[in-house]
Length: 148
Image 1 (cartoon, rainbow, N blue to C red):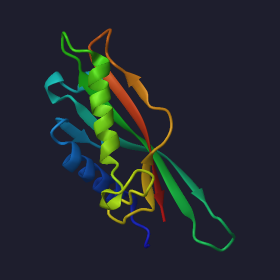
Image 2: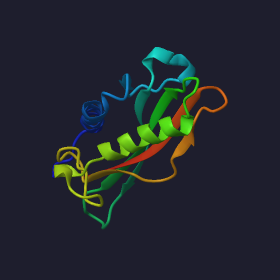
Image 3: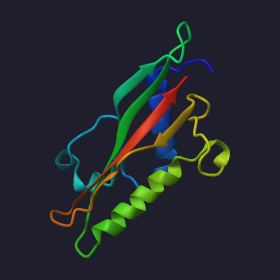
Image 4: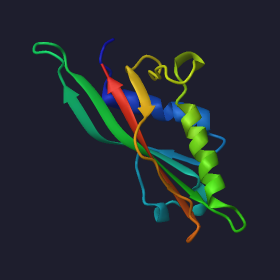
């Protein structure tokens, strides 16, 4: 597998999410904004960010491996009468389902973003704020991408 430039991978991943989540989200972007800067009519909003990289070599003289870590941030306005936790669950489950392994196989196999990377997956603690107090829900989902 030939290493793929970071931008191609991130743009392909965002495009994948747009294709699979478009009915649920009104905004998709890689430029994160604060929730109060995203108008109510543009929510639910989906933001994909990259924050860290981990570079390593398994042996001296071998090519490096690299993992990129980032987050998906989701903002959603909770309307009067809605239960925020129900909205959060619906959006979170849709995003989890969009991490479809190549060929739609069972969970536990790899999602290579159409052969661009070794794997892409959710790993770590997911922050869930249902917006019960102020009507603004927030979800932060940790994402790892393993590059060749």
